[in-house]
Length: 351
Image 1 (tube, rainbow, N blue to C red):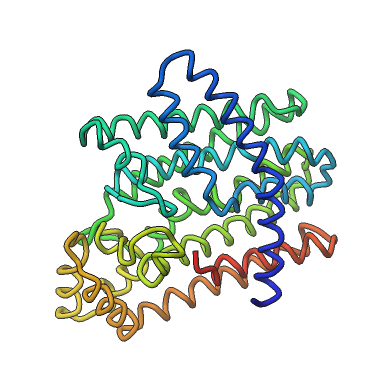
Image 2 (image 1 turned 120 degrees about the horizontal axis):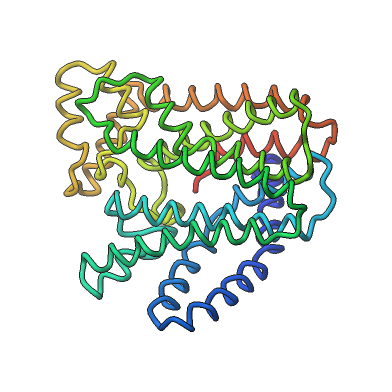
């Protein structure tokens, strides 16, 4: 393992260790409240929590990092508060899985598949409730934190804006199809609103806001870095969706193809492939019956046509661009090293 990956592993492991008991304590508190209503709400909350606690926790850790680079000092409070975005993220994934009709998430059955024992339609409805619940729990976690009223109002305004953008981005993603007249800018626009903002920029900005950051130059650099990290993260997600390990990602290899997702790999073939290559793409995109051998063939196809290299190079461009913002953000070597290692890591990760 190289130095960047080691540094990020330590950073994320430390965050996970500190917040593990905080998350369990919060869920226990909410479970007691749910129990006053009935067994099903408790069951839903417990199954949601099982999925939520298995995440990489990059977003929560970025809240802490944003707070730290802005000079925040109340570390116990920011660690506890940062859980709001991990809860939000897990809720977004629950709804994503319903829309994509996914069967597995983080190595566990998706929430709607788990509750399918009540019937397919009821399973989807219960999972929808689980995702909705997560959004309100996320607000609950943020607004009950021990920060000043003014800081919480500012953070809340930012959170509301970018949480809405996630939904707007998802609507664009849902209507982008093989036949859509879209270009790279359109796909990156979806990436920005659906993933990049709330994966990279939002957590850093919330953390910095709770620490009282007001410097416009630093806030602009924070946006540049956060978005570049978020774009690189989503680009690597596209790669892992086809070339990742099911054991590592917790999702079947080729799931993006089966779900018909308009990834940058797919876009490259649409714009650069000849008629036979585009016709082949039509046979595999959205084909839920793809076998493992079909996926292996598709992996080879995307590499031979140049799509894989194109996507990797684009991700590397965002990594290099993001690194240029770091000197503006901090002169603390430890924080700067973590920021640099993180943005390199998101394009090198295997999960």
